[in-house]
Length: 325
Image (cartoon, rainbow, N blue to C red; front, side, top):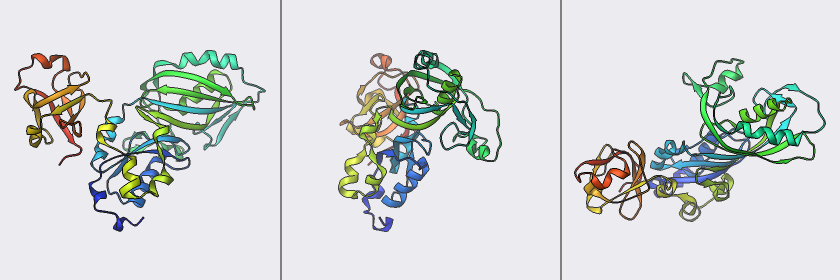
């Protein structure tokens, strides 16, 4: 599609496409494809996926690119397959083999029993082959030059980790993990392999869920870039309200909508209603009376204080405008 032929409405479009990322592309490749083929100027993504990975990749367009950082805290669910007995320098099948241990069959009972030790809150060091930056440089660029540096371990949480099946070869097993932001599945796979005394690496990785975004609701990149702007694309576009539906909401009375701007403080008397509980300094979506999200902001009080708060005192402050008039 020629960007010059795009309808002017493209420039005003704001929202998110939930893309089922194909294997073999980086997350930035997907963004570039959407920009080039659909003519959007502002395009960004939330939650980087490895090139070999498939699955849920939120792609934001227009003013909604400002929402990408809002979803980083969403939990994620992955399915991944591990080939035991072989380690690689990247932790997946795209890397160079490092070690190999010969064995006949996986001990299924041992494998199942040790998985529980990987759940809960823990510290995890980012792998060198990752998009994590050190002094502005992605670690993978250093790794490709043979440079390894010390990385600070990060706090993560693994909520659940289960074995789904062992493949007929007896050397490969499939798992599903639900985890917090910042978790590297390749590292978990390597640690499982080490605990089994065999080593291992990821041969398949798919993100099934990202917060309330699910793979079954995603559209393939091929289908997306071939859609017509006025019909197909509009049906796939997630509104800011839907993107942030898990966030608490503050709805504003119509008469006070003109007062909403970046940095504006929202006093209690301007509020039509709230939904969801929120704490002090928590991010919330700010909507008009009908529920259309127009901004996000940070709360000045908790929701339990609202009833006794003087009507002239601020409840929240606008941080970003998303979909304004």
